[in-house]
Length: 185
Image (cartoon, rainbow, N blue to C red; front, side, top):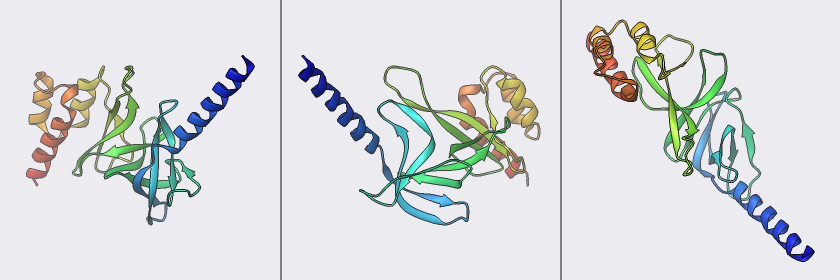
């Protein structure tokens, strides 16, 4: 019986160690000096499943990984997706996925959806050009928050006010805002 327990423990340790090595995808980091370094990037642990606060980076297979926090680097690219280091309105600094360019920018913080399938979702943040921080778009206070924040785009505000555009339409809201504000220049 002890022998089976020892084998099971050894197997568990081996599987756990192997899982820590998986999840690296081709990418690059952007250093604080704006230098791009190619390599392999990991931002999600598979076992146990969780989003990494600090990404792991290594220059190649078999190389030792180094951990980077959002305050140490400007961002990273992983498998064609761009993540940037941004300060939030609450003062924390996060890696967030960059979805667009324009006067109003949409970002997404990686998170698991809470289901058994561990789907990765993006928690939405927005930032108007000139604002030093990104702002979480909260489902509860979304209408009030956006009506104030996007007041220089009256037609978009009207669609939010009359509930034609809702929290789930945040990408469309960002696109309409940018079209209205930038089209008027």
